[in-house]
Length: 334
Length: 290
Image (tube, rainbow over all chains, first blue to last red; front, top):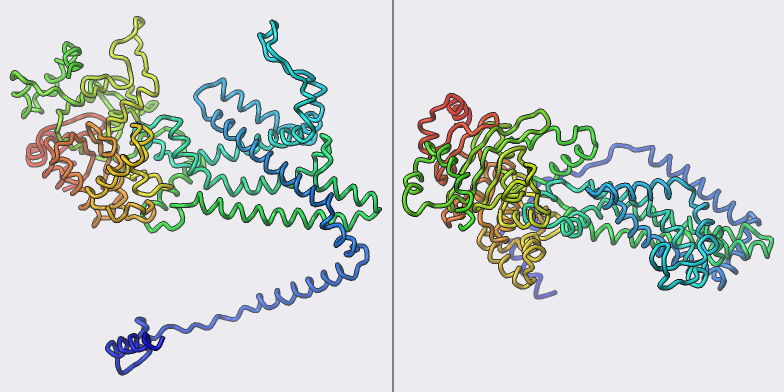
């Protein structure tokens, strides 16, 4: 430190010996601003503080919440296992849903009318019926379809297996939630794919890239930027929807575990609080994951000093609004 | 070259049709070693619904020739350019590159219809034609280097190392070696357009199409892009350039083609067209841009 201090001092001295330290600032007479009064901030702070204090007092003093019971069961083996199962079902159902949705969204854009029709029918059925109904159906799948056989239709069978052996309640829950979610995600992914500037497809085509490569390398990575925020939303929604797997019936998830304990204790409220705390904790973890996903797929989009980017996004916004007639005009020349 | 011989009976009317304007090359064509045209546009029409955008356009471009397309807004210049690499399908007429019909089989079917080529074959035809767009259309999620490497790896099956080596060489050629790891959003318009040119060149195209490459640029950035175009032209690249830069046309173009209302009105050397325009419409146009 002692060897470094003379250097800046001599530099400052040569720049402006008379003014000393002030010379380091290249902008003279900086404005030292005083905010105009904002009484609203203070009034709202006082009101909110009073409400929060009251709420805390209510939570602590009201015996109904029974905090000792909450403390006892927050790390109960059944509860923690329930958290694990809930998380596992959430992740697997979202993975299944995303894969199915991507396929449905791409089929919906296809030139093949058969694929478009299949996609439309899938979305129509799975979005149009309650997820509870679908979960009951998947729970009964082994009754409806006791045996799956591969062979010539109406002819000989090559092999067959009993669905009961391979389709336990856990997978019924994952498949039920995943296929339901896929129908919603398909629309999100479709709008994400449509949000990518058409110029990207044209530029890729002009380079001789095939449709598969264009989708995989150019369109989907850019669409992800638009898809990830609602996908995070859907994941958090899915976390809570897993409480419906009781319909299958799958009985190891968080809600079922806390309900079972509260029925045993005749103490519903503290166990509801246990469940709520865990759902909040998992949501917080998922939000961290979403942050990193958004940052990854936002690369190249963050800072845009280039003059072109804002105009392009404005044009694509105009196109996406659907208020302009499709293909009614040729490429306009400036 | 061998393909060029087969459609000869059909092709012979073309030089006659465009002959008077392409005066400089006609004597050569009449000689013993005719330069087979690299690009032939035969009777191209394009209609978007009721809007008749291109009307019977005939154009023939020799290898190594630099053609500049000029004309007022909405005259069909860009549409004609986009027909060459099949970003637009002509409503009528044929596009031939090196004698090969683009997008369709060489001969009509028995019932008079034309068999469309499969999309993989169309992609292969496009891969031999480089295109540079007015709005660059770089891939925003990839660095400049990755933008250039993408198509050689995906389309030509080059190895990563190979693609990187030639991409770096191309970046140096357009003067952007120090910007290899920048995303497009971190580059100026002129730099983006130079990366876009390098990206097209990475496919080692037989010809390059430029669709108003400087129209989206701030005036002080136009020169750096035109310099790259000029260097390409001097290197013998066959180019069609849609532009409003008359200075560039005068300096670099072997031939200037003037379009108006979907028709090719006049064509000739830059000197002929700009100094002594024949048609009233070209005179009006030049008066408005010069």
